[in-house]
Image 1 (cartoon, rainbow, N blue to C red):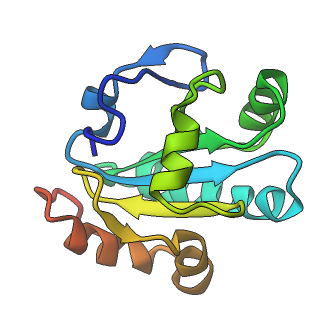
Image 2 (tube, one colour):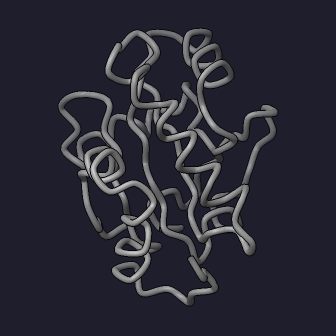
Length: 156
């Protein structure tokens, strides 16, 4: 996964810059294409928050999972507002980084919201993360983790 964001800088919710190599190493990564102006996004984001909280913040040890938000908001201010008001404590690609366009092409994003689940090397596990979370809840993470072929410490 490190490969997908190699050479890039990500942000956390505090506005600090984060090195993707460290933050995403040995994890299943959900790339979340979303926007605050989009009603289906605003509908799904709280569900994703609950999923993330249960897996990462309430599991011991935390699940090997991270989300990177890629914004389709109309401005940096819109992105920051949506990220802070509705999103979980995950990472984001800065709004000013044009790499978001390359990511949208690479993962064939034609509409939002879209949650693409990838391995550490960037290979797609599923581009139907949103549907799987809605249909199967936390059970889908085990499937993703098995497909990711990473060293596992997850007991759930």
